[in-house]
Length: 245
Image (cartoon, rainbow, N blue to C red):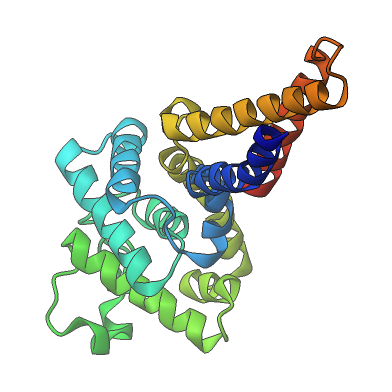
């Protein structure tokens, strides 16, 4: 009986420990879904940059070094101005198809087609053909539009391109890039540390032992019920799983 009491006292703490460890190791993909709205990158900048760089090389034929430079500039600007990186990538793909020396109407220059005459206060002799400079300036312009619209990113995208159709085009294109970013953010299930499984297993073992001891105490002449022990073990595992989410 004393052994049973000890097991029952230890069991709740062990279950809580297992649940806490599982929660701490929750896949980053659970957080990614909110990043499109908040602009906060859930994955490390290096992981996101690497995934985007690879995609730009495969999809747009950009040289690896240039693709890496662009992807790093995008992730940096997204963090700096709290903008969704997928939106910045969408704008660049629409405006210049990732051609850093692209030129358009009214002197629009570079990746995000910044118009110098309209944003002289942001330039100060900056080279808009430099990917890092252009993306920073373009992101700053979009951020300014968003602030002016009271935080409305849709209104900011409309102002950046001049029409609702342009904003819709950005949203559609951003979905494509979001998939790339989500891939970088979601680790494989096999990457989960073994400590989580060990903790859960230990809790299950204690549950099984407690159940077996309880049966023995209540019915000393009968053989322990394997079904009851398994049920207790499953209940503990379910509780740990529920707490982890």
